[in-house]
Amino acid sequence: MAPSRREITSAKNPVVQRFRDAAEGKLDGVLLAEGVRLVREACAAGLRVVEVAVSPRLTDVDLLQDLQQNAENYLECGDDVMARLSALDTPQGVAALVARPDVAEADLLRGDLSPLVAIAAGVRDPGNLGSLLRTAEAAGATGCITMKGGADPFRDKAVRGSMGSIFRLPVVHGFDADAIVAFAKRHRLQLVVADGGGEVAHTAAPLRQPTALVVGAEAAGVPEVLLRAADVRVRIPLKQPVESLNVAVAAGVVLFEAQRQRS
Image (cartoon, helix red, strand yellow):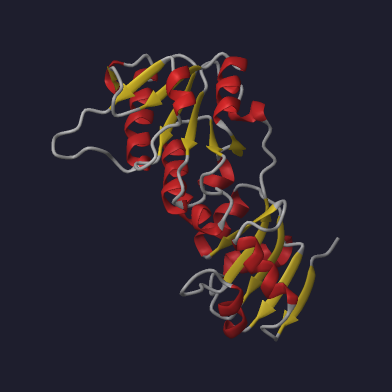
């Protein structure tokens, strides 16, 4: 079927609200990818482009041709309309609604003999969550769970913060603490919790074996249920007077230690 192609001339067109709803995570099954890099990353990951809006500001000819051929709905608009539907302060001339990756629980393990699943507990800042996802992919995590009560990884700020990792790394959102414990037991993963009061330095933790690594937000920390259920509580030694690290940095320190041990 040939892509649908039409022009949007009014900022009051329902398309504008649809893109804004997607930015806020209000549309089931789709997420917003905006800007040349993110849209290109989504296409390279093989995600279905449900709808794309482009304005004259987009000058990347290769991306333009790709979208014209493969987007299910191709919309042309002026820069003024793009500014209204965009979630960016300075739109780059392209915004796409792409199908969310369909991730089952087993996908978080990726069939790995020693899976490494990162778990974000109560991370409320979407930019920090996006950075955590990027870090998890870079360090070789097989998947990520973002817990209930934290930021939605499929909203625009988290998507941008991940710089495309959300398109490739299997991510599931909405588990509570009890579900995390059950998940770890079900898949025979040791539950490792990064905690300032941990008894084991991260470099001494046994991270070669199948692992679910829990990191929490700086203010709230990790839920008590997970602290009690932890097989290992690890700490990252810090020089005083620093008491804590940004959650994405802390996750990176432990995840890259796991990568080091495994390699």
